[in-house]
Amino acid sequence: MEKPAKKQPSAWVVGLFALPFAAVGVGMLLLSVLPTLYDWSRMQFWQPVNATLLAASLNSSRSSKSTSYNVTARYRYTVAGQVYEGERVAISGGGDNVGNFQEVLGERLEQALSAGQPVQAWFNPSHPSEAVIDRSLRPGLLAFKMVFVVVFGGAGVGLLVFVLRGGKPFKPLNQQASKAVAAGLPGKLERIPGGVQMHFPAGRWWGLKLGLGLVGALFLAVGVLVPWEQEARSDMVPWLMRLGFGGVGGAVLVAAFYALANSLRVQIDHKGLRTERRLLGLMLLWHQVPGPEIARLRVVESYSVESNSRRDVYYRIEAELRSGKKITVAQDLQGRKDADRMLASIGSATGYPIR
Image (cartoon, rainbow, N blue to C red; front, top):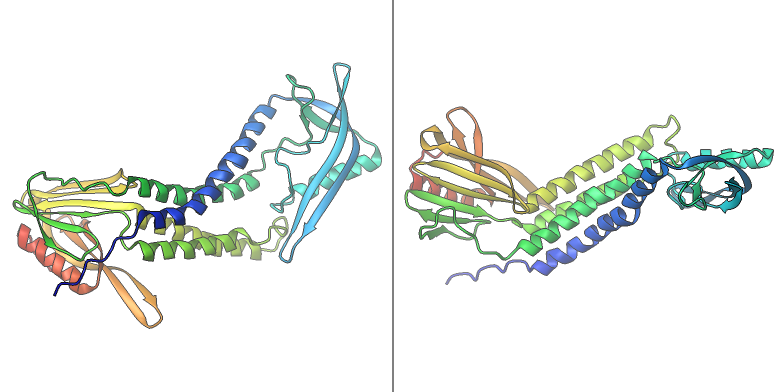
């Protein structure tokens, strides 16, 4: 009696997983990064003016792991005989602990207030009521925000695009009728005249790869949330923590996203080999090789996953060319048995040596 086919994961499961990532990244981009860049660009055309401080203070907010600082001020300035008051201190409002920008600025303003000295501000010539004391862009803070935009937003939006593009029927590379000769694998292997064609769609082993992405996201979050108050000092521990956890976590998250979002189409027959590697449906890499250039096909171990005492090994099939170059023609094959079975099917249909 044949075993019932495994049900494919519903698109909404992947979509629900992707939504928080996309919301964080897109929200940070639209509500923080882009407004900051816009304000910085237009402030480069503002004019300097001497301002008299009416109030200035450096405020701190302590937590169990770090201390955030926020500078507030109120100042008066005159433009064309008209007196204005402003409260904007820097481009980005609110507090943070990225570098020592807030501390340095706060101490400078408090000292100027105590000494009764004026400070330089910048006003908008078109709307003189708009002014700011410090118009610095702060690359460190911007880079901190871009981590969320690129990593979290990129992963979330990419998965949502994958979900929206899902469910479309596979269009064979060769339009002639074909017959499936292998089943139960992460892709389709179909016989065509003189060979086979294969399609390994995005979303293969989606549970495994989403789990890997979550692990990467957790490591990245640990690296990003390491306290920044030591940044201006000689202590290298926070930087090593960021590099270790953040770097590894980011790399794992990007790798998991690529593994989940890429697809592979292959056609191999006595005339040669053609492969198309796509990411979210967009062409990423392709190869076209004449048949005489193919030396052999072989199974190679790709990666393994361990949980408790169980170790699952995944394989790929490579076409080794006479020049020594290797091209992947099948991937994500769980277990040597399935990999050998697919290799035998390809070899039988194409006549290329297998090993």
